[in-house]
Amino acid sequence: MKTEFKTKFLQHLNQKRKEGGFTLIELLVVIIIIGILAAIALPSFLSQAAKAKQSEGKSFVGAVNRAHQAYRLENTEFTNDFEKLGVGLPTETNNYTMDIPTADGTVATTTAIPRDEALKGYAGQVKILDTGATGTVLCEAETAGKSAPTPTADEDGGTCAGGEKL
Image (cartoon, rainbow, N blue to C red; front, side, top):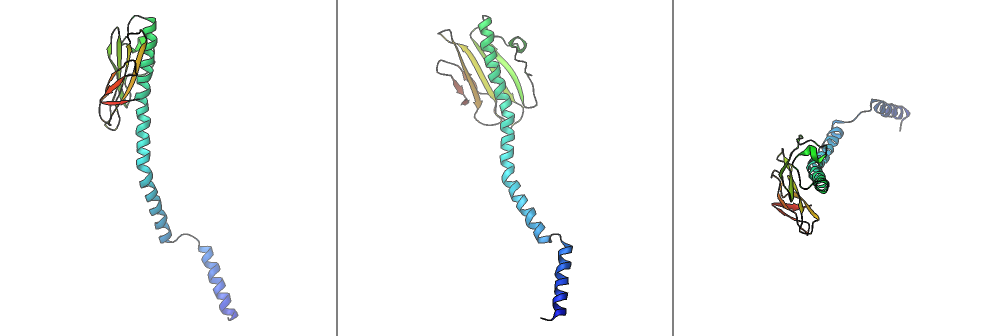
């Protein structure tokens, strides 16, 4: 090779290195890869977000069940007054409306009704059993968008009509 040609070729390569940057094809490939990864990850992320919101209803019903047991030990019946239970949780949030539809001498039922169609409803029950002990059950609706199932506490842990026992 001629020296002049070698010099010009090396100058050309050196100049290309100085320009740097990415080609349009390289940028498009990176954008496509990011799009594919986002399409794979988004459904998983949305599912995890719904589970996090649902844990609010589940933990509320569980806390009220325990508060009912403690209140019943100190008093002769259950109550539907959240303040008397001393749970310290709000009865309405962005995700759920909490209620105690049943509270009498032998049974107390608590519900967490979803305010969003993507969330499941929860219900719990505390019941004084024939033995004098308390039986509890915590239920989750079978599918999202449905209201709380109907729990029935018993010696074996209880049942959930229209839902799944947790």
